[in-house]
Image 1 (tube, rainbow, N blue to C red):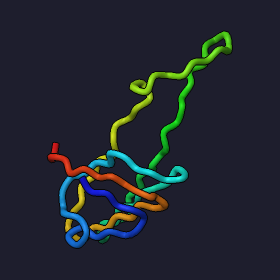
Image 2: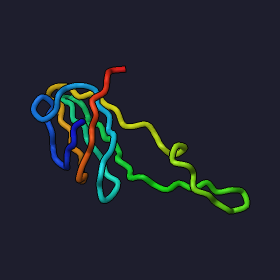
Image 3: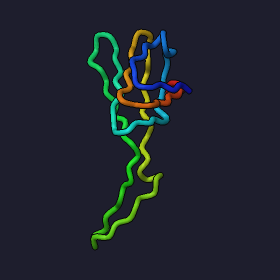
Image 4: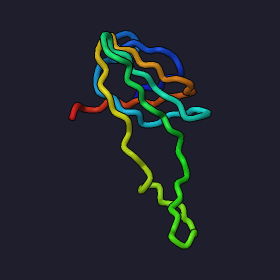
Length: 101
């Protein structure tokens, strides 16, 4: 597990190459993480804070959906030597190296 704060990190210098997933992050607002690979347009990943999601019934009443219904898959990406990532406006970003699928 690797924990980063806002800044620019280079693969091969600050991080090992490999496949990663975002397992958690802390920020004061929704933000983004940028992945730069030489010769390509940057990839942008939205980092969305946990939200309370409600289901509205036909009669206008609503109830909070259980967390397991709302939870989405973690962001996964591959990092190669020379790539750079920029987690914007985060106080912490937790990455976990995962096996290639």
